[in-house]
Length: 236
Image (cartoon, rainbow, N blue to C red; front, side, top):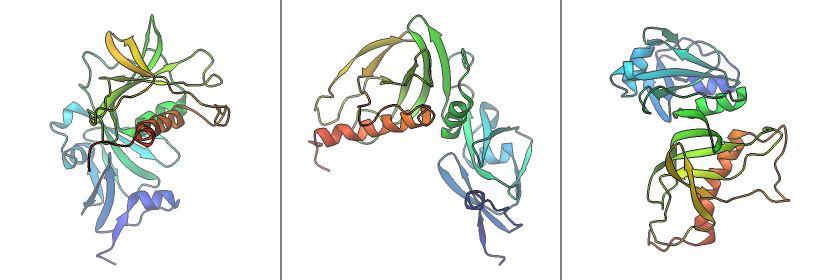
């Protein structure tokens, strides 16, 4: 049908090739857009997402299976290409100086970070090896909506577990209730807040299964868990 809207991501999930159509539903970062053309340039996709000027952003295309491909500003992408899940934007000036990649990540970890559409770096200094993720979302009830999160990579990872998380700026609850088991940690010249949260014997690190993606999912759970431990004292 001419009026049918083809959902590009859904076709990818079902392993199908999107057909030619008048309208396509695509996702850029977390937003969904309906476009009335079958092909667009990287520049057009960035403009659609409100990323101006486009020269200040990198556009990536995430494919089924986790593969991520960079898209040039004047490169054309057709939505009938099999496997397209979504597009992700990355600010090119999110940190001072050049983006730092001071050590290599596991391929699955790098692909996961790219899939978030958030700026990230790897940093090695006197305090250890760190994965730094910027603009990481925090659930409601805290003093900020996004935070920089640092994860320490211990020698032997991925056999050795990822543990705890570190936040900048320091998190606090809007209702004034305390957050337990926190302390300070200097990372990259900034005062991060360490949350001492650990896996239990009932929920151990699973070698070959757990990775950066599962650990950051656990971090997001910790944000919400704080309000399970102490109910929000601020009326909704």
